[in-house]
Image (cartoon, rainbow, N blue to C red; front, top):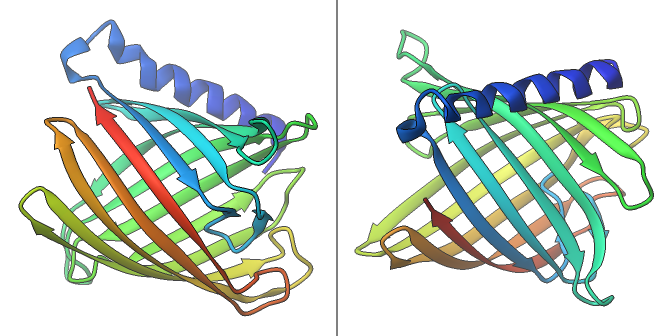
Length: 232
């Protein structure tokens, strides 16, 4: 997919997601969230940095789509900017059928802007099936500056105890020349976290991500995190 096409589509989806602000203001929701990680372990197997980082994020949801933007700051280097990410997309609710129960499909385009000026657009899709263990299937197609494709399959389980929620998720990733020179299973991850509601629309959570490397670029390591979220 051409880099210019992805950037153009991103702008169009952002405009579409924000359009209902003037039409259906009561249907708009927003979320502000923060994350602090002990190191930068991506879902796709790469360890970008062993420094801890802070990431604030703002999200807007509308009846026809959503948009979000976030930025990373290196906590070990005087809060140095480590790049931003902007994305927009839409969600489809797929009805139950003979093959599968009801499921949800996210389709979005996003772009990573690195401090060195390099921009990495991508197309992202994620299918989550409303079944026991919530099977999920992810596909990513990189743009001109970061070509290749990435796929993953995962399962997850949550359990709620009053205002506290415990979550456990596992995922295996397949790298098809996505920032690499091979096509093979690259890594697996296990995420465990506990979330606590601290106000009507606010939560705080803490957890750990363990990564098991299968190919050379995907290290076997772990990262700890604390997240907050407030919905409006």
